[in-house]
Amino acid sequence: MDDARSMDAPARVDLSRAADTAPVTRGGRLGVYAALGGLTGVVPLPWVPDALARRVRGALVYDIAARHGLSLTKEARDALAEPSGPEGPRGVVRQAATFVGKKLLARFTPIAFVAPARDALGTYVLGYLFDRYLDRARTEKAVRIDAEEARRVRRAIDRALVHALTSQPEAEERALPPEELRDGVTQLVDTLLGAAAGVPGFLVRRLDAAFDELLPAAR
Figure (spheres, helix red, strand yellow):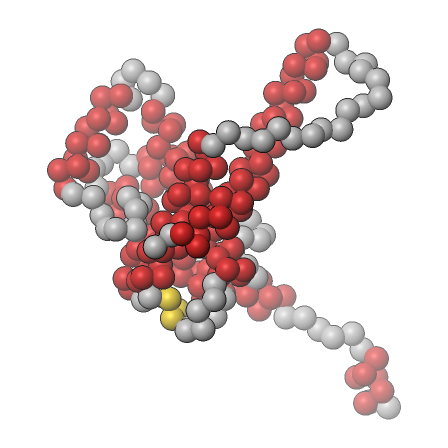
């Protein structure tokens, strides 16, 4: 009887463990990392934002690799997490000049809003495409990701983002209602709101295509 009841009873799922092993790109976890990455750009001090961004991005790529059962060498983590690119941090003079330039521009433009948005987007794209690489494109059998592999992936990620933001988008086919019953103002507002709502999905599709195309050539 006990055996029969145990066979008929539904299997119990450890939800806490399932949450711990779920991909970072699901359940809003990547969004939290992206928000933290954006917050690093509001610190009004030179060098500090980049240092904080490295910490956030480093934790992100470690989180993703661990959930795929992989390890990152220190050099690989640094190459993926470095805000200025896979080849290493920028020079002290360049960082100082960039900081001063941003402070001057902030007096005349809304650049204070640009840096957090840029950093949040960069963090999101890093996590999203690194997870896509480990999930679909990685062919290496080693459980350790080394610096050479990390730099190759980071180059492909950076190039995919540039390509997605700068290349000419293809026209998308949209279903139209059989009869237009909206007035002109409503049509305009609906169009603008619909376009804004479609940006995330549109960008993700372009990132996927660009990354898959550019990864084999990233050396």
